[in-house]
Length: 186
Image (tube, rainbow, N blue to C red; front, side, top):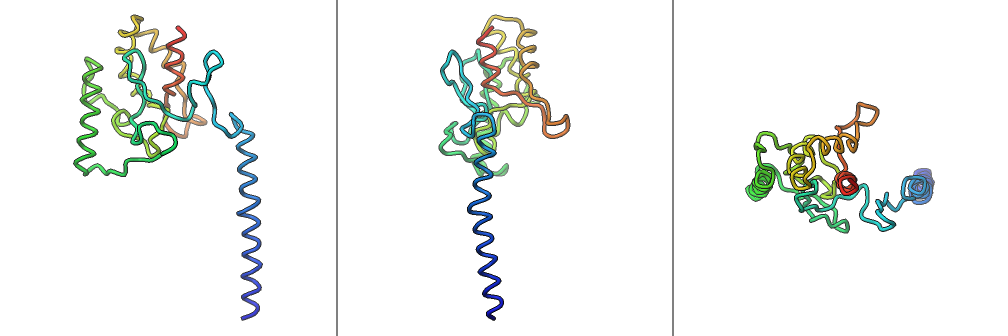
């Protein structure tokens, strides 16, 4: 019995050092070596912070691309998903409302062309990116509102499209804040 107690105490001490000291320090060092020094990659314009690269924001004006819906109204202090499943009637009403809004503000758009990311919130509720398809369905509206050619807007979308990691992992996506800032700089 004494043998097992001593082994348990040793294992506990090793795990305390590993998980309470070494692991947190290594995560802090990795954060300090990343963009933004662990405080997030700030996006600035004229010396003023306008947002963060990895936090979604609400854009409601027609001359801007809209981001993915947020279950937490883009509140970074309360990151969360909605936890509503596809059979939940309240969730289905919410999704239908988002579809109706997209169809209203994007004339010529067909319901069958709307990608899922434009009507469903992400798991965090703060996703800063939309799919290429999500950007493509908004090109006509943004071009008309800004009185520029659709081709010019499509070029900006192409320039701001993030390709999959190593060409294999994940889908292509577009950071909405960076795209909208590129539009403002035209």
